[in-house]
Image (cartoon, rainbow, N blue to C red):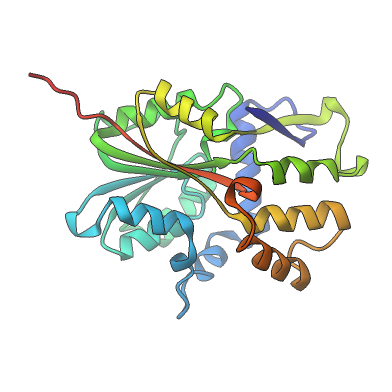
Length: 272
């Protein structure tokens, strides 16, 4: 497991305080809750292209009225999408300001502020739990998040999660970062863990879950990052986006996957 750091001068914040502040600011800087949600309200179904959605729907059908938890729901687009598909989804996020906005906009949906390491739900509350790029942001490691996921899942329930993949391509991209992108050590703060397949499998197994599937995803993002850090190209520039799209459809996932997706299941224990 590798650590990634980011620049942050407010090092007196607690870890939870920093994470809440960082993501609250991030959602604001990308247009806020309404702007992000509006991106998904169009004639084009953006979710149809998402690897996470294509995999999740293979294991949990909306017709069975399963209750799902979105741990680290952010601006709520996944909750809104799955609720519209017939699922029953509760969204939890550490950003209280973001959750308050979601509660204001969607009073009939279930959103609540909380820390996914210690949530206010009874044991065995959910048939499925998904969390995209969240478990890796705590420096103590993934186990507190996995342990809590195990607790709130029903026996036989599925955990779907993504974490940054410690792929060759992503490691190679780090080489090109310039000194101006790296600040002094005393202004750095832990940001995330990056994991290999075996490391994530070990974490899930230690947490009592059976690993069903591990799959690197989001190859395009790694290629775009390499172009940005190596050649200074704009992340959102046409050349970087099209190159990432083309090469991402050709190169192996294990070489340049940006995220690692896992499907794990809570065992059904024989009580006889």
